[in-house]
Length: 192
Length: 251
Image 1 (cartoon, rainbow over the protein chains, first blue to last red):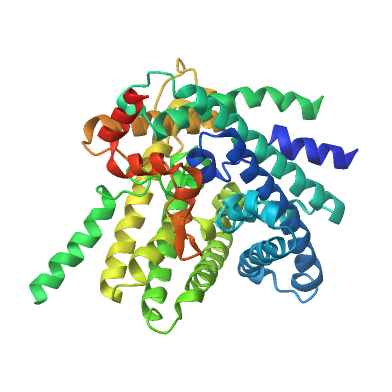
Image 2 (image 1 turned 30 degrees about the vertical axis):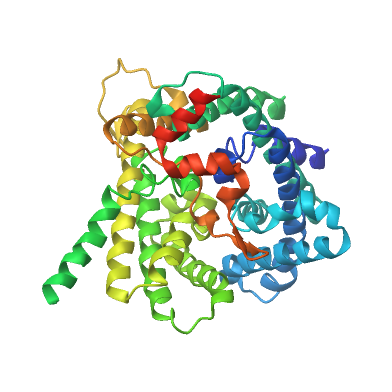
């Protein structure tokens, strides 16, 4: 039950993009094509889940065991960066087709704050191992949902006559605000 | 000569305040901007922490710029930044526990703030220390100013106060939405729109500069920008708003 709650909380109620403002850069800059957004989202979900596993192991077996909490940020960011590189090499070698659809997005994910944010939140909330994995998966899927919705809206926005000063970032941010407002409706899910 | 250096130091400092303001003009570092500006004091703390990390890391990056080989430069920049972020985080935890608690994981998230990595890559890894410090502190002050400004606007509308001092009487009904995430997006969106009215050159297209540190694929530099946008969009974004408008009309 707890696991399900973590998943729903990460994916919908406390959506990473719309409530924690993590991963805003790809969210705002994302292409207007839904399929691109979807590939980026799936690649990010993959990296997030792997990161959740890796950082949990590091935190529990190295940092806590040897009492090195001050190395948390440095070690996490290094692990994320090298993990992304490894995954990229692995996919390129094993499945060139998958690499063409997902792999090109991978290096860009290193600088995505949602990935580091995920690791930090998981440590802060002291999730169990399974909880951390589910948290990563849920957060990734929530991110995918948010950017796919955004790409869809921006496709429609092409047709709209937006005032010149608001074109680009301005209207995207306001749209995101309205989207966040509608996601607030899910807040009742958790207490109910 | 001395006069010349002084003037360029001054220039590098001042350009960050408005002309290259990271938030309003270049749209960088959006995560902390939106997340912590629900009150002015949070914005100030976050801005100062970021300025500290930015300035210290630019000194370090500038010092080692001739030693570090090109392939590992980004990794080493990130480690330097993460170290200073740890220092800033522990400082806040020790001396300002309530603020540290409010900011939560957004202080460690300074590590991936694109403003810092972007400045390290674009400026301090190529310039001497004095210029790097001037540039970093200017950008940092511009960032802090923008955060405090956003924080003040949202705090006035959301709580009816500035820096926790009530300024309205009993009659004021707070706009709760302004301190919620939705308020952050909408306030910043409108603010960028208003600023665009007064400035001739429009802001960028909202693509994070830190992410535009790309990687090489068959000798071609692939960046976040070129990844997210189609080639013609990219060209339009580079050419500026006029051409972009023409392209839209053409369609």
